[in-house]
Image (tube, rainbow, N blue to C red; front, side, top):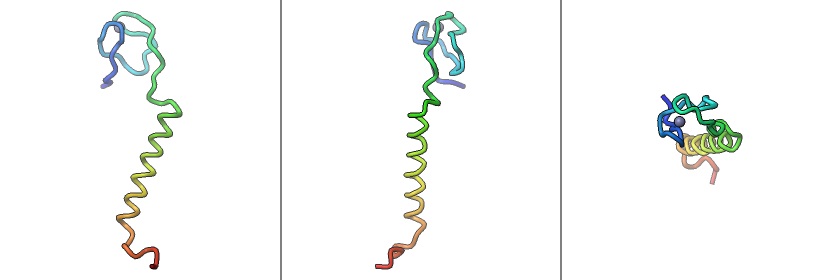
Length: 64
Ligand SMILES: [Zn+2]
């Protein structure tokens, strides 16, 4: 399910694992849910929303 790999033994690991289940080496904390990553996801969602809005609105929505 996860595409993460242990940096020590190279075997697949889970993002929630604190240590590698294969070689037992401590793993760095998962980077998937850091605030910075969340901000990027929200920003991308906002851009997609704006693009959808541009396509949805008629071309003369500004009244010009
Ligand atoms: Zn390992």
